[in-house]
Amino acid sequence: MDLIIKNLNKQYGNGVHALNDVSLSIGTGMFGLLGPNGAGKSSLMRTLATLQDVDSGSVTLGNIDVLRQKDEVRRLLGYLPQEFGVYPRTSATDLLDYLAVIKGFNNASERKEMVATLLQKVNLYEHRKKAVSSFSGGMRQRFGVAQCLIGSPRLVIVDEPTAGLDPGERNRFYNILSEIGENVIVILSTHIVQDVRELCTNMAIMDKGKVLFSGSTDDALAQIRGKVWEKRISKDELPKYQSEYSIISNKLVSGKPLIHVFSESELNGGFTSAEENLEDVFFAKLHQLV
View 1: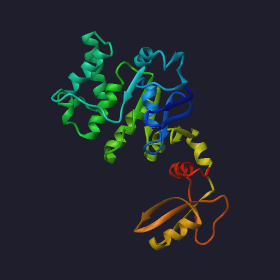
View 2: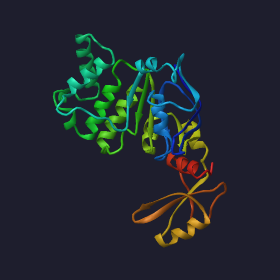
View 3: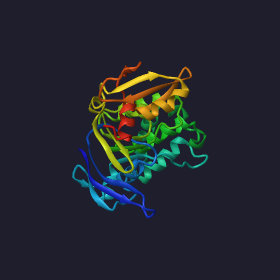
């Protein structure tokens, strides 16, 4: 079952063109949707989650028309938004059970078994009697994964899931998403390049409502291989280099800027070839260098 998105357009009343002729083909596995804030990622996610309509275009999930057969989509959908609310003083078990009822699971014994299995899957079973509102950020995100897996969905959408998580919780989250992605379509929308690098074999880069790249991470890296050069400079040299070169990124290393420059030809003057990475692809695409 593939998700096929063709020529989606969405313009809001304030004139913002959130989706501009977006077309993507997404199969089973982890798919990374990468872009800065305001790129249109959340607008696309809300559309796929049947939470908003578009002005034009089409989306199909297998034989299902996503834009018109919304009830059918919701039966196959698991959605973890960037932020989701919880009821105060409601335990993880009770809240997950309640959400399962909303999704149409009316058999109490079936729900009980499913809830226990899901809480074990996300490593929250020992905390099942605690209020979800008392959970840490990472625990709450893991609970969010559990709720979006109710009913064994075929399409799972997670929107900015690791923002604010510490490294340990982020790794636990990675492991859960990787396991889910073995059998279903998982779309990971994020502005964190590391998330895509760690988890996804296929990806897209969006900016200002447009798809700038779609393909495998290997193909993305191939587009800049041998074309990125790095050099450590002093802080007062940075303006000079910014005026003379196509700098795609700079970061402080031991207090000194390390610049990455895009160039089709070899650079002298102390530059060395940089190993290609998705962060450089991301910035090169945003700067329209490739």
